[in-house]
Structure formats: structure tokens, C-alpha cells
Figure 1 (cartoon, helix red, strand yellow):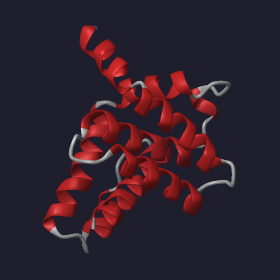
Figure 2: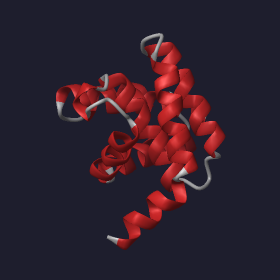
Figure 3: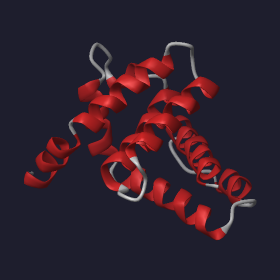
Figure 4: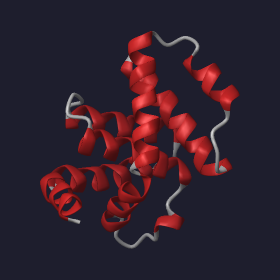
Length: 139
């Protein structure tokens, strides 16, 4: 199920943000029960967030008004990285699904204020998707 794959990708990205590297044991544990399709989805999220990290953090930082990127909770940043990547680069994932799943992850794993914070940033990314991608492609 993509929801589980996304949640496990979130856990691995969060761990990477905290430790600075990927833990092969965590990866093995979190992918063991996934079917091949969901593992491919998880791997695409991990690879995509990693390869687009600087771009994605720039986008997130640009919409996190009043928050320096280093002051955003790592849990929230991990959620925002996944949702932003899905919205901007994965056309097979509906933007509403990405936004809803991001808010649900925040409700489960973060603070009571995080869902609205994340929803606001994700809404801005969705609204400005075309401009964000046009700017990226013109650089």
C-alpha cells in the first residue's frame, strides 16, 4: 500500500536528517513487508528527495514565512520533502493525495500546530507548481 510505503519513506528520510546518512538496517526492516510495487515507490521517494534535496529545501524555505529552514522541526521537514517531491515530480500521485497524506503524517508524528503549518506550505507549492518548475527549468 502506497500509504505505508510513504510513511516508511518518511521515517527513513527523518532518520537521514537526524543522522546524516542512511541506515541499511532501518531500510531493510521498513521495506521487508512491502510488495515490489510499493518498494519501488518508496525507493523513488528516497532517491528523488535525495537528488532534489537542495531544490526542495529552497522551495520549502521560500514558503515557510517566518521560519528559517534550520528551525523547522526535522519531522515536519521530512514530511514536507516527501510531499513537495510528490507534487512537483510525481505526476502519477494526485496533489490532493500528497497534501492529505502529509497532513495525516503530521497529525500522527508531530506537534499539534504542525498539520496547519504543513498544509499551508503544501498549499503554496500546489498553487505555484507551474511557476516553481518553470523557474527551476530556466536556471
